[in-house]
Length: 248
Image 1 (cartoon, rainbow, N blue to C red):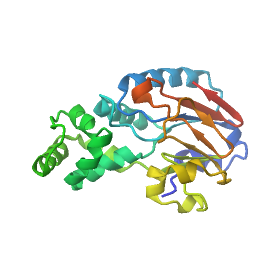
Image 2 (cartoon, rainbow, N blue to C red; image 1 turned 30 degrees about the vertical axis):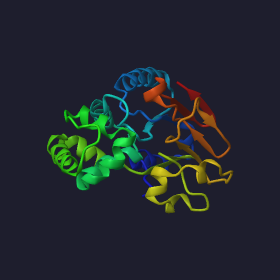
Image 3 (cartoon, rainbow, N blue to C red; image 1 turned 90 degrees about the vertical axis):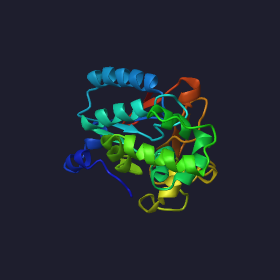
Image 4 (tube, rainbow, N blue to C red; image 1 turned 180 degrees about the horizontal axis):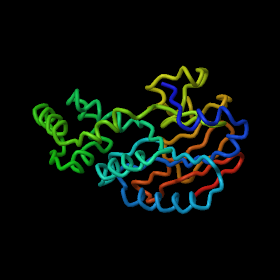
């Protein structure tokens, strides 16, 4: 489950200076805000054009869907950008919920409480506010039919984590006391207090989202860049290059 951007790291192993010549652009939780994604793309592209680094990687931290109005458009935009190369989109707990719904319609009872209905509507479905068992099954079958094949492939292929240089990227965080390459998928997607309150040195600085904060948090062992984009209109992009940390 410990995913690596092999196309970048393979070339890095032959170059001891690679980490100093690698720029990482990490982007927080999007939640259906295609308007903010497009603005972020513009700012990242402008920065990339000025960046002297030889290697440049964009890492999206999950939770692309739900709550906001344009989940389907966000997936379309990210899938297209990932095909351009040097882009890693990680899995968030909300993407996991969508995939679960395709095989277990009853999960909509909980998924709808944190934005699942908005995602269904973005794909052209018309759910009632509180679908019963029959409607949940019908909605699951309809989404299975209507979800574009390349969206499904994108969602199914999302890795749970990524390690680059001094940083470890995961949607929610990591379980203290567990090696980074032994982390459980559930913790990478869902963990909160046990991770957020820990002062443990995890071996790498963990860059995460999942828990909204008013402004990005820079702590000794972790960096949180979920600034509640769907509600605040603030989607955070953090550039990491060597010791440099820059907010776009």
